[in-house]
Length: 163
Image 1 (spheres, rainbow, N blue to C red):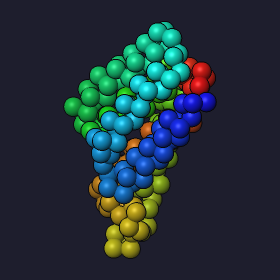
Image 2 (cartoon, rainbow, N blue to C red):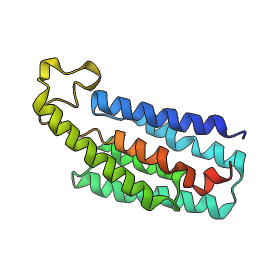
Image 3 (tube, rainbow, N blue to C red):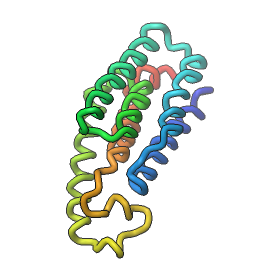
């Protein structure tokens, strides 16, 4: 359980990314950098084996290539395109289908809620923590959905199961 503080840091960073994205519609590079970086000390502490380490690394790198392709097509924002690979380093390949499903469903529900709230809450009356997200024509803070998907699927991770 020596890696437990790193798991807590992962969950807290995901939560902070969700809140920050909801508040500003941005996910800072330093936050995604820490999410990715903390994967390495966990692997050094847990020593999951080359197969598990390689599978998680391959999942993250593949996600990086795919999300940047989607970013270049305008599907994702830059913060989202960096957060997905960072969390997939931790999640790995085993729960990837569940991660994609939960993230997509969470993102869809979030989008519908925002559409409803944007038509119901007048912009000057929007609460400060979600002012940008409730601005008409603003994007969807998809970091919220990514964080939900990551935290809910992390227990299925091969790395998590060895901690």
